[in-house]
Image (cartoon, rainbow over all chains, first blue to last red; front, side, top):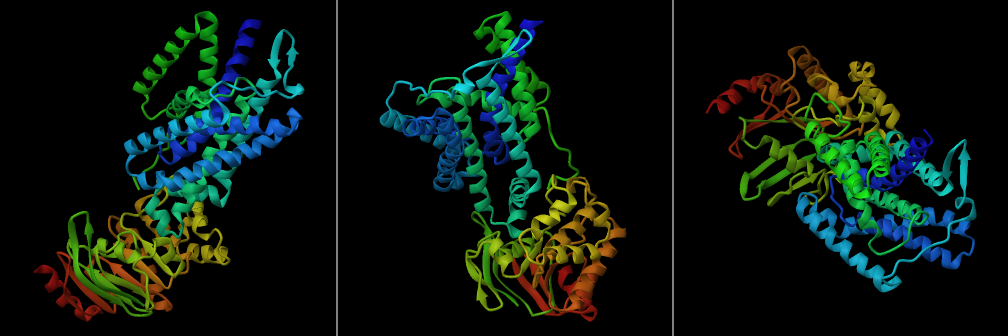
Length: 294
Length: 230
């Protein structure tokens, strides 16, 4: 029983990391339909922001707290710039978008190598996040609990923005019917840029979280990006609750299988399960019903 | 109020409108009639800025708005109800209306006025627009356009594909709006009787060219029917 609980917690914490990375994608890929291969590099930008901050702020706790909003702004600004410079010209050409953003991804990785060097670097975690909490025989790592809390906080924030604010209504309207939004008086280009800013900013926050569980390197984002796209597709394109359920389900499945088999076998089984699921339900876990196509 | 002057427009290499000139007088209704494929909806898309003309100009109250984006035209007092009862399907009825009212100082009053015209929308405020019937969605589309308090309203076949019981209600509302004053309307319509009752000016469009035009009113209906039967 203890093993099951421990593995489940490990799975949930893996899911939380996946969720944080996938959240930004639910906006840029799920809502806007842009396959942004440079999303992983925004994660990297968030992580390096933490690294740079820690060089100037000696307290790991303070630098982490400052890094969260700052990484959001840095990665968000990079995303908005990418949207303004390139992506907005390619909205009707998904294949070109994929290739162009992949090129940008490679350029950003090289830029990171030039600025910070090719070897991975590390940041120090605040003392409060280095220990464990035990409840009975089950152990919870503090850093993993922090990431779980951060992921849930981001989900809550994003949900509130999308559902209850004028900006959220505008984002949803532009996604659903761009021309109608434009003739309803909405400056759709501006909404696209803000959506991309938020989506990319969330990737930056994910990057900060990843510094607590692993090293920082130029290719760190690429390692996660495929799994994050899978979360969005399996959850149902543009569906936040689908992404939440899928991220945790994949995390737990991966963790349990890793315990009973090996890491590679677990990965293969999870991918086969996803392929089988999408054959049965191509639209993903959640979809919305409508009477009209408009 | 609106001058569409010698407009040539189309999609890719296909030209749909060949030098069309249409004008909507201030506080009056002009209607554009024609068969399917004549270019009526394309004309409205050009007027609203969804399609840039290859040649010609669009003037609103004397200002050249040919190069303005649609949302900039809305800010200048234009509103557009496109063909096909379009809505934001995953937003509720209330959200569809709030979307337009957001940020407008008179948004609440304008929404209340629009809901007074279509009271059924109050009962449906929590329902997603994609789950409404065609007639209800069209009422929502017109209400959404009116919240911007336009001085020029573009209506693209407002009663097309709607159950007869709601058609009469929508027609009466449009007629009441046009008689209230302070609103000019460019109406694209296949239903000749309704169009001629509403309009002071008519244009018949055939294969992208104006083939007949004149003063509206029910008296001109036989002339228009003859022009359309050619």
